Image 1 (cartoon, helix red, strand yellow):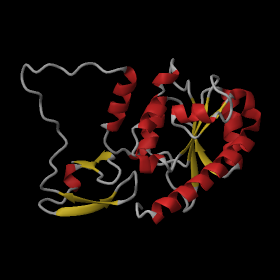
Image 2 (cartoon, helix red, strand yellow; image 1 turned 60 degrees about the vertical axis):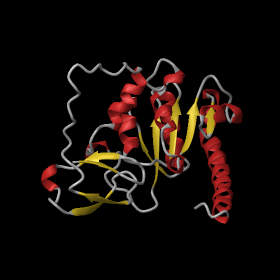
Image 3 (tube, rainbow, N blue to C red; image 1 turned 90 degrees about the vertical axis):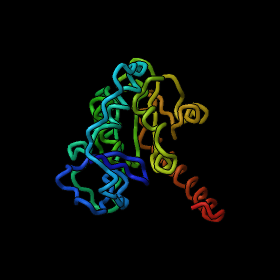
Length: 231
């Protein structure tokens, strides 16, 4: 059976033999952890319907879109979860960097700030992990597993997130094309901060300052939303 979470729109699959026949049931979403109520009679097996005979194939999409569509359509696989167990209050980081020198320095900074770090080796692995876990911080090189910054798979995946989920993630973009803490570039890229590799030695200080400013901003923002009755 294919299941779609009505809260975060995440999709996953559970074996048909584990579905109670003829009755509704509830389970926790592996992505957002909220309760999902499923009507077994309205959710059939996962086999897709065959296309009409003679129907034309859909137009071919770009490599990035095809990868995201492939990942999004996958069923739930426990192996895709980046962490087997997390203590309450644990903070997590996704480090998408292929340069070994930069990666080592960034990981050291994240670890010193108290984050549990996972290091995918390719965009496919990163997207799998992002499907079922909302990271506190993502440090991403704009050239991670791509030839063009505009085709960065992780950035495009983030742009598809519902805004309430995206706000929970602090995204730092490592880029040779922008200055460190270039607010206009960060806004254009829909990230929280830009970091030029020339400042990588001070990344712990840069992240500490930027995360503190972001936390303060959203504290004020969420208070304003609450006062307006929108949360």
